[in-house]
Image (cartoon, rainbow, N blue to C red):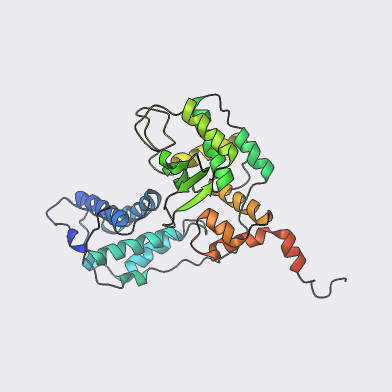
Length: 319
């Protein structure tokens, strides 16, 4: 990947129409996120979404005038956007606007340190139990997809990957034919969110489902990505959304509706199963690709049997 320097970014010229100026800024910001920050498509889309909202709310149809803004303008926007979101998602506007301010500092449009004005949204760490599915529910979801059609074979392989490996949706979407070592029975997960590569064992049922899809379901294509869209021109999924839709459809088909529906439910379920099977936090972190064991530590709360053994009696309760 070509490295980028700040001099490649110049302040946008005021003779451009205001709408075009905003569009150019968002495009340059997205390029900065990719080439300087190394972000994957999913986070970049979220950041650009909030930047567009900020530009529309703050400048309307006028050209952006960064020198006219105060720290409170950024803070007020973040508070307003965060107030519309659930607690587990209210960090997103602040993260996006901090990234925008770092970008504007990078190109010399504002002074350094403005990102400190963006207020953090309070979020109690490990305040809730991670949602997960039972092994029976997982098998019900996986088996709800029939492998009798090309789409069914693709979706079945995707669901097995999510269930057995705990991969992120973006990691499944990014898998290529070169990432499978059939001789060694391993799967290479290239750097995405954590910027770390890891090699995972390829379970027999996952390998069989992949073989079935590659031999009898995958369209003819020069694209090296494993999973392709089922409509012309049979290209790769643009981002993780395609994998998420497949998982949501399967869960609804299986009647799993009483909890948040998404691919992370498979990830939490895989981690919970590993923990209850005796795996250490380090082993779980290595499989999931966590940078820190603190991230993995949330699963300690779902090991209820171990917690019960170390719990103390409530004062005044019967012995």
